Length: 68
Image 1 (tube, rainbow, N blue to C red):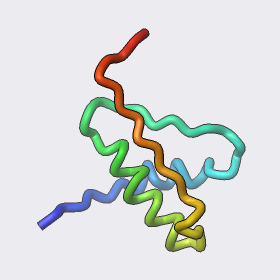
Image 2 (tube, rainbow, N blue to C red; image 1 turned 135 degrees about the vertical axis):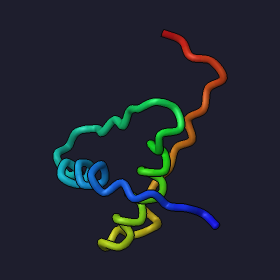
Image 3 (tube, rainbow, N blue to C red; image 1 turned 30 degrees about the vertical axis):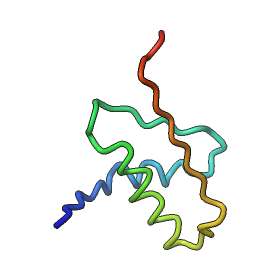
């Protein structure tokens, strides 16, 4: 059984700003649900509101080390 934690507040914040022409950056500590928010909840919202699956893009950005 997979538990899905709703993140309505954060999803609402993204939606309020979705068409303002700016890039959105979601930050937080490790394993707090940033990827789940975007990959699952935001994608589900877009598809339920008429976005075509064929125009949604996903990038996998993984690095073994971080340079400052």
